[in-house]
Length: 372
Image (cartoon, rainbow, N blue to C red):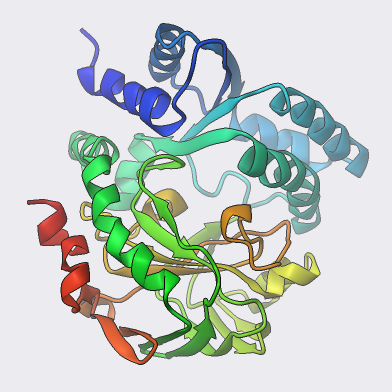
């Protein structure tokens, strides 16, 4: 017999996340194929009356495509994929991690072409703005290894995280949304971090299982030119096949004027891809009570309880601060005591200390309350 948790996850994605209606066209895109889960998704889409379409991809095959591909190839691939995406009402995309560094030796100029053409045109300009969508990871031995867990234990963790009660979490997020709507100034303090910006007039958004699985964040965006100070991230991040660590940005009037990391040349090359890459597009609270440590996977790491992620690059249309970029890089700052602690102040009121909300109206978002 198959694992019943697979069917439960497929049901959440199809009927809760993208809410497939009869006649709607759904693209299921799986990188590093997991046939049993793809089949479960197809069946659930058909049960909902939808039309299912499937694309299977492989990181090692794509590496070969991109290693020496000319710009014409990237542009044509984007054209083909965009034409298909324009026909879709919903998109479910997931990856089964084999090797986080599968593209590490793809030249940076080729990754720039991928981001400029395929990622920007298909996934930012079309999928994010015009299609119902949800993205996720699927458990694999590589993910278990990154987490320092056995495969069986990681699967239990994965399904606990991904099939949690998102409706309960959504309700608990409402007071934070209300508070952010009334907020002007944000001040973030921590080891190596003293950062200030405004979020005035920018609509906060709940991420409660409708766009990412796992989910658990409330995001807004800084006023584009309001960001000043120093920001030191303490969570590693895989980007284009490279593991970035000790990332530190200095901001002046919104712009990253100095950037350092374990490869300073490489990170500045990424930030120079276009003008918007050196400005922020998102500021978000991580709220998932099951996630406590980084897995070197953005979809999990940006939801770490007691964290924030502060994102150079493109701003989402539903909370648009005017910044456009082919980059959208969710870099995470954990603020629990084990990670060095930290404080978040909204309009000179301390609302979170060492990863725990300290004002009564937000206590419902603390881990013990979400799990009770």
